Every structure is written in structure tokens, then in C-alpha cells.
Length: 438
Image (cartoon, rainbow, N blue to C red):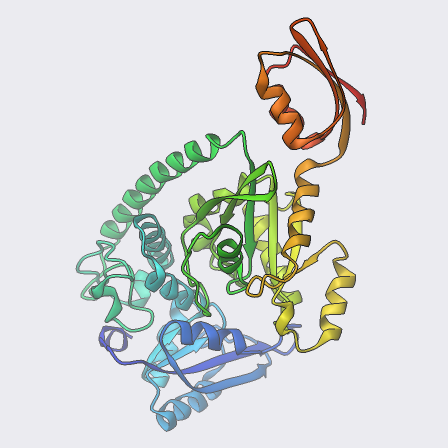
């Protein structure tokens, strides 16, 4: 196995993709997403190997007969790497590499490699390094024998870029792996990320006076494009998976007098490696602390329903399953099958249909957000000192004045206001506040 993973290449690697599903499984062996992932990692897909198998074989996952067929395809297409759309054990990878005589990667290792190439900021690099080391640590004894230095070079560095798919991101030099060095590095990374997490939490807590909205969704669903369209954030956008890993937060005014914070997050995929979910906890903290999640859905993708399920699973994993969610159907301008969109609209009748690229439906999106922002409407009677102009300004900006009377140095105001704005009004310290209705 070592000889296949020590070879450094700067050219694009020729990849064969494999999806082998047990016959009793309800899963389909579709390789479209793995193709997009492999191409995002820089591979050239030269062949695809899809079929049902009777059972998963402990030694090679697909059985030695199928592995021999795969070896023939490797030679025929002059492939450099074989990528499985499943997670493989270290032993399975080792046995497969003996048979096919090229590098073998599983789905998790491929996703980790993509994250390594996308990491730009210090935080993202630390998170990727931690995820890769935690993935590698239990595989050390059986995959190779040494790491000359595990220093976390990061896949976005020049050193990480030359290693080929699956070898970038943590500074591996395969001579003999030292578990103690890896364990020490993991501890150091966790300590650094805890400090980053504390700083981010302080930033989030400092925004308590503002309504917080977080964009979540499958990778390449259009979250960053929507953030740019709504806020002129100038976040990097590209038509590829995991184009950006870093959270961006910007102010957005969906209506006059209303200001909220809008945050983008890293995109999700099905079977996102749990190491990534754990290491990107600080980044995903924006979703955990949001008042509202906007779930951006690429309705032009034929697998939209499966993608919705995958996103919901990740949200549950980070304890966001009970958060208020507004579904946003993006890319309606390029939908090919109207019947598919109609099915989604039936399943999610409150969803808003938009095109972040053409700005279609953004007014409806703003109205839906304002409705969630305000919540159930209340009728209030508020007494405040005339010198406390903040109370009056807040009610005029965020509510609807019904009646206003001035008495000596006080002002009595009856107004309609969303329940979600009540805590913010109380923080302005009116002299008296009474709920009349709602």
C-alpha cells in the first residue's frame, strides 16, 4: 500500500469510481455525486464500476472476483486511483491495493481531501487537519508505517497541492507512523480550535440584540450566491462542491427599519464524515445559535429530495433538528421537470421559490422572513418616558402604532408588535408594558 501513496503527482489523476451496493439494500448505485466530488478534487474520471453485490466481503468489500475485474479496468484505462462511494476499513483498502496495484480511496477520504484543498483561513485549515488526523489515526497501523512529520501543512499549501488526491492536508511524509506524534498533534489542534470556538461564541453572544438567520443546505445549492445577492457580501462563488468552507456573516435589511444578521455555512453532502462535522463545530455554531434557518434547496437537481434528507440528518447531528426552518427552492429558473417542482411544492407548501442568480422571488423571500421575524402578532400598551426615545423609535420601526397619547413627561402607546420582538423591546426598559391581546 505504501508505494501507491508515496507517489507524488502534479498532473490530474485518472480515476475509476466504484459503487457496489448489497442486493438487500434500498440504496441506488448512482455515481453522479461521487463524479462531482472526484472532479472537485482534481481527478479525471475515466471509468465507472456500478453493480449490486450479494454481501459485503470483509477482506475486499466487493469480493476478490470483482476486485480482479476492477484490476483489469485499471490497466485498460491506465488509472491512477480507484475511489469507492463507501467507507472502507483499513484492511479492505490494503487488500484492494494489492490487487488493483494503484491507490484506493473511500468516500470519506475523498471528501476530507477536497476540504484540504479548499481551506484558506487558519481556522478552516486547523479544522481540516484535525478531521484528517482523526480519520487517519485508527488506520495508522494497517495503512502505512510512519509519518516523518505530522505538522498540519494544510491542503491549501504548496506542499499539500502536489500530493495527489488523498495525500494532501496534514503534511504526511510516509516513512513510519508514530502514533504518539499524531495523538499529540490532535490534542494541540483541539486546544487551538477550542480557543477559536470561545472567540466565535463571544462574537455570537455579542449579537443578542439582532435577529440571526443562517443559510444551510446541500453543497452547491446556491447559499453563497444568495448571500451575495441579498447583502453584496462578495463571497467567493463557483459552480463546484464545497467552493467555500468559511462562515460569512453580513447585515441584511429585508424591510425598511428591520435589520437582521445573515450567515452562510459550509455545505452538506450525504454521509458527511463525522470527523468533519465534529471538527467544523465552531463553524456550524452559527446554525446552532440562529433564530431562523433558511434551508436552500437546489430544485433543479433531480436528487433534491435525497439532498433535503441529508441536510436534515446533519442538522439533527448538530442539535438543530428543532430549529425554525424556512425552505427556499432555489434555481427555479433552470428547472427542467416542472412535475418534480410541483411535488416539492406539495410536500413543502410554505417554501419560497426563488432564483438567487436572477433575483426572481426575492421580494416573497423578504416577506416570508419578515413574517418569521415578527412571529405571532401581539397588541401592547407601553408607557415610556418621553426622554426614552428608543422605545418610541423601536415601536415605529418594528410595529404598527394604534394609539399614542402624551401625559406630562410620559407617553402611552398602543401598538401591534411581533412576539419575537418583545424581548428586544423589554431591553429598552419601558416604564410599563402590558399585553392586551395575543
